[in-house]
Image 1 (cartoon, rainbow, N blue to C red):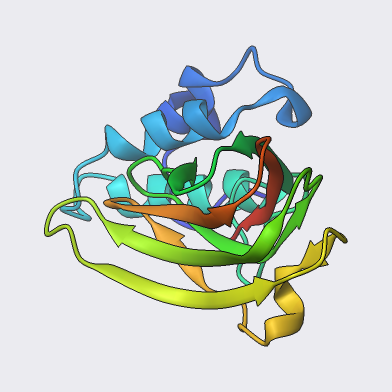
Image 2 (cartoon, rainbow, N blue to C red):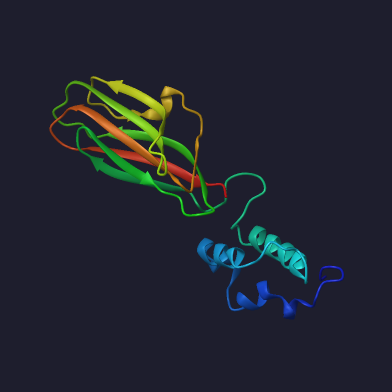
Amino acid sequence: MTLPFADKPEASRVYQDLKTKVLQNLTADEFDQLKGSMFAEGVNGLEDEYRRLLLLGLASDKISLSGPIPGTELIVSADLSPNTYGEFLTPAEGEVWQIMGASVAGFTGLTGTAVFEVDIYDVNSGNRLQIVDSSTSSSTDQPLIETGFPGQFVMHGFKARVRVEGSFTQAVDVSMGFVRVR
């Protein structure tokens, strides 16, 4: 059933622009580009296009009204040398990601204490919000989520980073998990 009082679906820009796409193959970038090309005036049939865009976004799992978007989970890993920052996620415009957790593994030659800081960095101001400050004196794997940070959100204009400090002879493997919520 079409939207009441709306133009026929055949005349819909949402449907015309994406008519050759299978919902499952629609990418988040393609959906965001279509959404980004619409004006927010709500007249001349655009309100109906907004409804169609919402339906398309929900049907294709490109937006969610209830939390994480299915199929967007990712784990990013990097080998970090002592006393360096690793940037793990820089969201694109319109994206919001939730940090699921972080972990460190693979110490070699650790002497003394190693410190790990997870932060959210504001690329415009240079300010940072430190959400984890954890340390260890053993060479065992360490899930940083045990330190108690709740799921934090990272959006456009910010970066999720980890800094590793200490004395060890090889880079350590740091991983962060994310899921997109918008």
